[in-house]
Amino acid sequence: MIDLRNILARELIGLDVLVADASNPSYRGLSGCIVDETKNMLAIETTSGIKRIPKPHSIFRFNIKGNRVVEIDGSVFTLAPEKRISLH
Image (cartoon, rainbow, N blue to C red; front, top):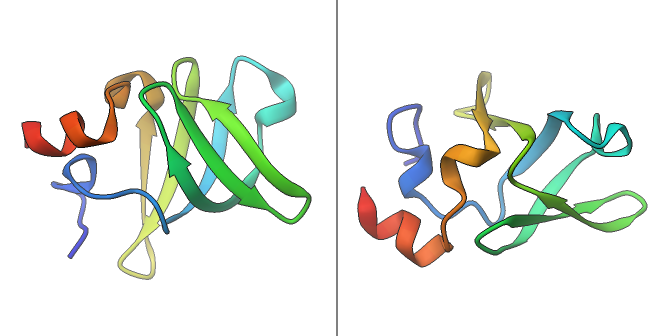
């Protein structure tokens, strides 16, 4: 179960996400489902197609456990997913 303490140790693919802030203003407010993740990028399926958002310089908002929200600075998890998961 994903919660506030272990979200960075979990698989992010399949989670709904909102780009709360980003250095590129065109990314701000994008939301959808994460369909892929690399070391430096999240691929989000939006209503207008798949958008690739760089993790560094972006803040992501995840909804977990129904009504709980967590915001994470993308620079905190700029690791390959398999390495990020194995660290926790």
